[in-house]
Amino acid sequence: MIKKYLVLICMTISVILIVLAALAYPGGSLLDKNSVGFGWSKNFISNLFEAKAINGLDNPGRIWAILGMAFQSVGYGVFFINMSKKIALKVWVNVLKYIGFANIFLIFLIATPYHDLGTISIVLTLIGLFIITFFILKSKLHLLKFFCIISLLTYYCFFFLYSFSYLELAFIMQKVYSISSILLVLGLEYFTKYEDFAPIQSGEEKKATNR
Image 1 (cartoon, rainbow, N blue to C red):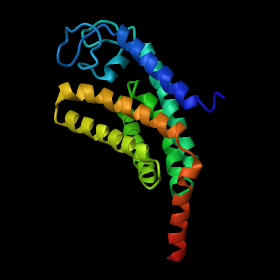
Image 2: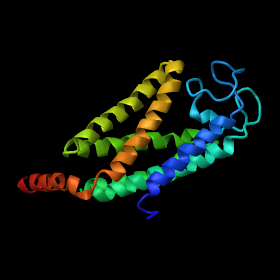
Image 3: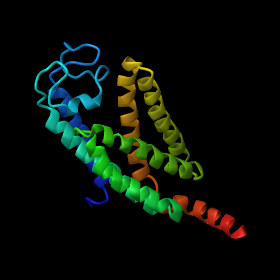
Image 4: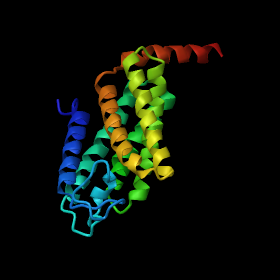
């Protein structure tokens, strides 16, 4: 029972802990060091992982943020491992598995002093979601096709806004892509099955045989 709902449990606990961390954040943002509390449209989530808030005060919510990322890393990791069992084309099975195992470790690093190394997990997550989106687009799961595309677009929008220093919009878009990614992961985890991708596997094998 727990194994079946492990991704949902991890993601739910992660969100709750991140919210608790935000409520305990003393204050300060990149735009206003004297602001009070955590502003969802004024702070990056990474601010919650620092021992000191931007305003210089101790950050009592840090422990909740770190624990939240620990649960999220397990949730994403298990999700990619589970998806590798549904998409049976051997060439992609190991790729998704490796992304899953790597993310269990790397996503957690985002909440540590090794944050820059942890950001590799974002690249791996994008690669994994891109691979899954490719198979979803070839399936009959029409609603998930829409959600896959929207979720990937929110990632790219955030990177664009952040890269060109549109911070006010980047603050918001970070939360949008985080939420859309979690919802997409839950949708893919609980509303897809091996049979959804079996015709794709058969088609690819026939192409290979004909060659």
